[in-house]
Image (cartoon, rainbow, N blue to C red; front, top):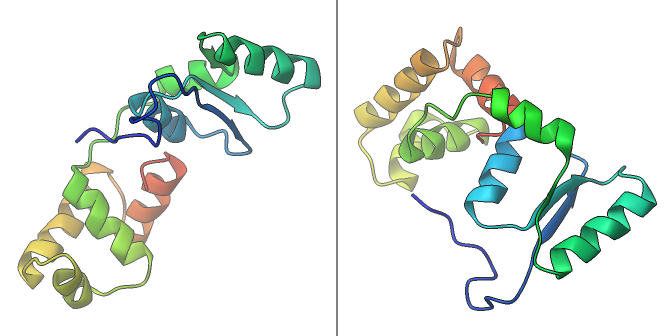
Length: 138
């Protein structure tokens, strides 16, 4: 499933994300929606100004350390639906509530939770949430 950015109706608009979260998963998702730059907010002032100018001119900018980390980080093994279910569970919903929220059966929700644990090689559901969150997938 491809995400769409807020700039889809404005093709000349450029997006530079300035973040405190040095998370490879967030960088990958940002690239999927077509942002032009992704840098950390503690970037030195001069580099930040250069990044803004580069993006405004149509170029692309990535924090080099984060880019290397993202290249070494595996892609998310979870399906979109598994992520939805895991996200609801992380928010405190139990499987029956998740089934109602997502129009699924109780058994299907339990299967998605089990497959998420297995795919992430987690010890349990809470560990799966921790792994997925740390990887930027939730």
